[in-house]
Amino acid sequence: MPDEFARLTPLAFVRVPIEGVVGVALVLVVPARWRRLAAGTAGAVLGVLTVLKVMDIGFDAVLVRPFDLVLDWPLLRPAVEFVSGSAGPAGAVGAVVVVVLLTVGVVVLMALAAVRLSRVVVRHDRKAAGVAAVLGVTWAVCAAFGVRFVDGVPVASGTAAVLAYDHAQAVRTSLNDKKEFAKASAVDAFRDTPNDKLLTGLRDKNVLLAFVESYGRSAVESPQYAPGVDPVLDDGTRRLRAAGFSARSGWLTSPTAGGGSWLAHATLLSGLRVDNQQRYRTLVNSDRLTLNQAFHRASARTVALMPAITRAWPESSFYGYDKVYDYRNLGYKGSRFSFATMPDQYTLSFFQRTELARKDRGPVMAETALVSSHAPWASIPQLVPWDAVGDGTVFKDMGKGYDAPWPSGGRMRDEYRKSIEYTLNTLVSYVETYGDDDTVLVFLGDHQPAPLITGAGASRDVPITIVAKDKAVLDKVSGWGWQDGLRPARNSPVWPMSAFRDRFLTAFGG
Image (cartoon, rainbow, N blue to C red):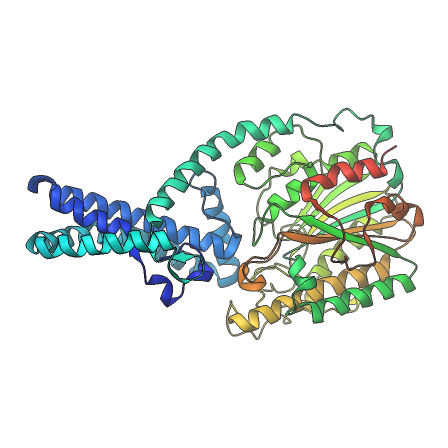
């Protein structure tokens, strides 16, 4: 079978697998006393490769990349937590049990099947040899002429061998990656910058850095989503302009897609490309200067609002927060919305009344992850008057009435669009309601959603926008070539997300 989800069609299985031809030849030449062992071992290896290919297909469908044998095991825990958050604990336990049984079953049954087929080959050795020879010639001809019934899936299949080779190469690369990343992270142009030279252009400003879950370029440009999302952005631009605010927008290329939000956060805040868990662990155990730490050194109070974090988060000390608010101390009394533990409006309202409304405070820099647009988009909140948000009780029954934790494909895409519209409207309404001369909002997508939403071949670009009332703030980024307003132009500059920290610190430094 092909190793990409988008190519799993019936015609994609019309192939001649070279490992089958070689397997028949192997059975015919191996001495009888070793035949059973050889067939069983080959079958088990094919079983393991089948499991690995299924992992590749799953990772391609969700994270738009193959499974990494070295680096991806830590992702099993958040995967289970995601299923638990969207389908309940029983659904998560059931999923784990089914996966374990299928994994063991595929390897064992493939080995037994290979042993059984080896006996058939031996009983019909002449016919088997003839068929193997014909198929071998067919494979060679198809390979020479590139015959295929499905684009990207040749009839002459060598995917098992290629799969094994590619993953062996990837293991070597992954093992060397830690050393390469440590070398890159040791170079930091801003580590020794004096405190009085950091972020001088934002002194006395309240800066809110908001990551919008799954807000990618496809939401702004895809014909399926743009007719709904773009009017929200354009209307938001007009509304903010009427309130005295201006905005500039561009594009960043995220290091991840479909998931792994924390990798995008780490990339933007550290100025390093963090695209796997090993890099993330190396980073959070280093002394790399983050944007949060830079604001802290510039005498701002730094806080994090992370509604999706439900347990201890030791990495928070690396980022340099003075205060961390997560699900356990955000005080939310309403209902969950599928994976999202609380609506984005509640998160922003809590920040306003807990941090910005205090009379005894200095400037605040806050980072938040807005999760109402997180997969599986099964339930989406509605905006309520800001003075009615309170402890979230107003959202108590709003997320109920959905018949399944995962919407069907067509409805899921529709709900994805609605979730992005909700969060964008929430941000605009927040600035309209609470913004002042000292407000600076930076919001961006963390990554594109999965290919089920974007379609195959989507880029990893995400929109980023800076909103401010003080003209001097946006004058600092006038040379970036960004588009006026909340919607970036198609030809707006595209930077790696890892480039943002240095450009931001340079633009607003002394």
